[in-house]
Image (cartoon, rainbow, N blue to C red; front, side, top):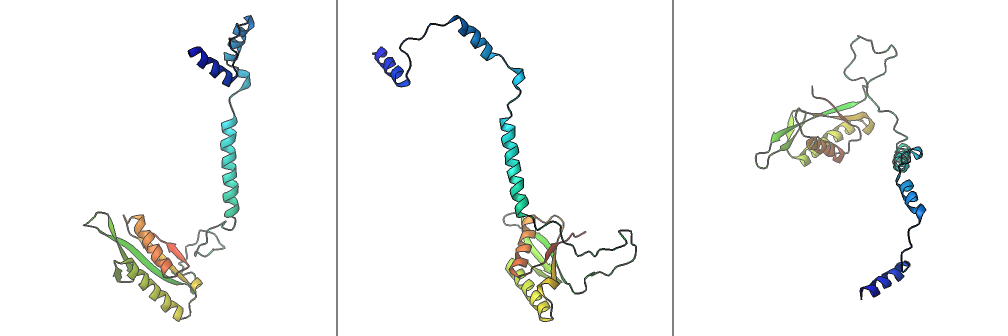
Length: 188
C-alpha cells in the first residue's frame, strides 16, 4: 500500500522511481557548493532595495514641497546685520493687528489630565466653542476698522506644562474663527 502511495507521489513530482547511484564527483561538487566564496562579496540586493525606496521617497516629497523653501517671519531685515543695539518698535509692521492669545490649563478632577483654559485679553474661556466665538468677534472688530486677513496675526502663547492637545484646541478655535495668519509664541 505504501509503495503505491510513494509511486503516486513520485509520478506527481516527476521523480524517478529509483534514486540514481551517487557518482564519484558528486561528493566533491557538494563540498565545493558548501564552501563560502569570499570573492563573490556580500549580498547587495537588500541594500539596493532600501536605497531605491529612500530615493523614491525623497523624490516624491521634494516634488510636493517645492514652493515652501523658507519660513516667513515678521522680523524686519536690517541691512547693517545682526549687531544693532538701537531700540526697535514693538511692531515692525505697523499695519499688522496683533491678537495675542494665552493657553493654560486647569486640572481635571474627574478624569485626570488637563482642561482647556484660553485667555483673550483679560477674559478667560473654559469652553473651546466660546473661545472660538470670542476670537471670531475680535476678528470681525478688526475687519470693521479696515484690517484685512493679511493684516491680522493671531499668536498663541502656551503656558508652561500645557499639553500639546490643548494648544491644538486653541489652534483649531483660531481656524474656526477664520484667522489665516496664526503663529506660536513662547511664554518666557
